[in-house]
Image (cartoon, rainbow, N blue to C red; front, top):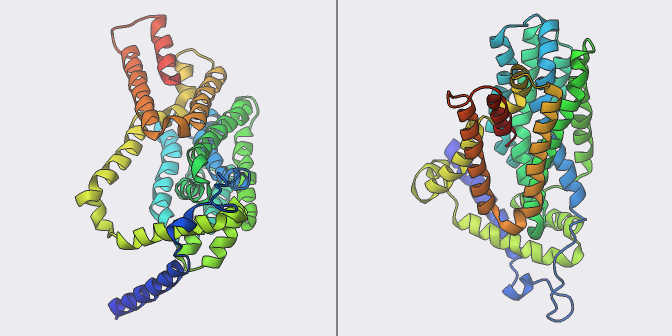
Length: 391
């Protein structure tokens, strides 16, 4: 019974898609952007889509903020909640958030495809608001852990949806630059958390304010997404061609709508002809692409970058370096790297930046390992350690 239902639904869905595709099946000449007779009108203005990119970047800002919010506040928080000196409990405050992010990331794609990109952003903001409120009002360790679990779930949903949304609403010629805006927003969120957390050691209970502060941008994301554009790609796949046209007009301008719809139609035909099962991603011709993409993310995490964001205050303090100054330097270093990517992504290309950045990470970890070995001693240990961390 279930099989017949799925088959019937698939036939209906395929028929709807075929109707939409045929509606926008333009000739090759119609794909070109023309003004008058044979005159290319160039690229659409980036200014039309930029406000929506900034709004989507709010989710990345929140991701960065929650990465860094426990950095300066962990010590005072542990005193107030009664787990000071318990390294296991301190680690749980950090890792519970990551566990929630893992859960959220598992469902991120299903949510984005099921309810659309706008609603996915709003669903991402909801656990962030609930979790931040729970963390800010926590009376014990368990209350904090539950709040961090909710926050982590929102963190897991947000970034994949943001990356997908930015790619789908951006003009092609600035897509790489706009993609870097998400990383830039993450860095700004991280720096914002570090700056807001500075008074935590002097003002009793300030760490609660640090969690309350994150509720505002999450609420703004929920509110303004109600008035943002939906992804034309998602609308088109749902058989809502007229709505996709309307969104393209907002994003690109009237003269570019037909071309964008034609390209979308062509892309959709390619997707239909090359439909694959989930299991096929792990063997055959798709295996290498999936393996390479997953490995890039895994190696980035295994470099220990998250440990820098979570525990840099503790590391610098043990090395005798003031944590406030050190954390500012960490934030600035991260921001400079993101700014470089922002201006060079569409000029140098993705592959060149990946090779350069991973090579730099290898050098940085070599420096870190050298500082922890018996090869160096005295003040050189501190200098090498700090240098490696910033690099």
